[in-house]
Length: 421
Image 1: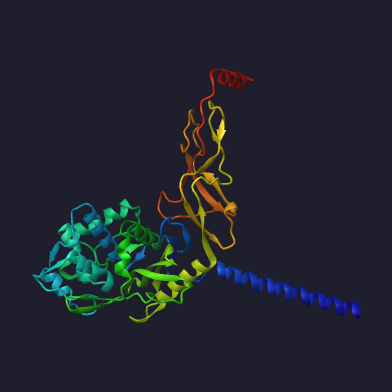
Image 2: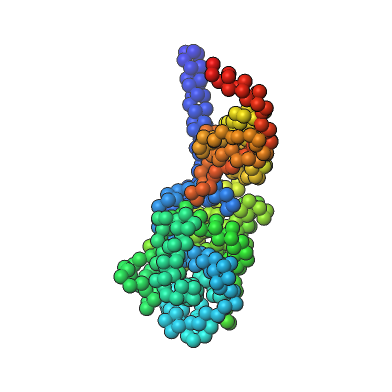
């Protein structure tokens, strides 16, 4: 009886341990992958494009007013090319003025025949998400809505977006743009991008137009006496995680898109990430679901992961030596060309990062200078390759760690003889 009791006690202990183990594993799994309640989502490093989280990230979806980021991106491009200036005036047509006061659309009122500066219209586009202001910018740049839509699609392809589709500068459905609607296009046609493509667009605009956050972090602004109120509920929210601050970027809402948001945040002013949530719950205009899910995603990134710095000149395990057949030394160690940041789970060490050449590196000829290109490498952690948005992202440039002089003639002849045997 005692033996049977001991056996039952031990068996119960085993199942308790097993249950505890399952519970711990479940908690660990939950920490590893947050459950984001949206149709699509992604989080990436804003500088490198490293993917930190993704859910259905490559499926094109309606993005509504997030489209305005492309409009502002093109504005900035034109200013950089000296084809447009912040102070340039944009005259408002009767069609745009009518649209700016249409019921149910987000806008600031524009007066027909009146001119507004490019800067004023960009501010209205980003802070208030003014649809008519965005359309006015598109017409200023391209002349007609159709030509600007074509320019948006061309620009998208130039930055690596191939599956998306743009119909207008604002993100409204084609029919809601009234007399500015595209001909021979369905009235329900709406701009489409995947979460990954939205992140790529945001990455490009933050890189080339970093001061955009000076506009997108505003909660209110004035436009000719009209008080504009921003829609980003995470601005000034200090509860996301310690030191994390949100400063952008853009909301988007429509019947087809649901409630969507592309966010930008830093931790103590560094390590900026971009988050995209598409198709969150949208029960009312004030429904906070997209912001709740974004905050959850940002919190998870900053509390469970950390960026590891790979300094220029670092070696990477698994990346083979460069061959220099006619050099004094026939091999040399490849090292990283520049400083790189890699995100990994907290507790991961730099020594746990390994790499593999994208393509087999060519044999080098001597004399070889320090810093000569050896090849590009993909990195992995725990055997899992790191993923990036953008077709050329995630390729780490490896170079020679020192100069190698050419071997003398006798040494080269001797090596040639040895190769015969």
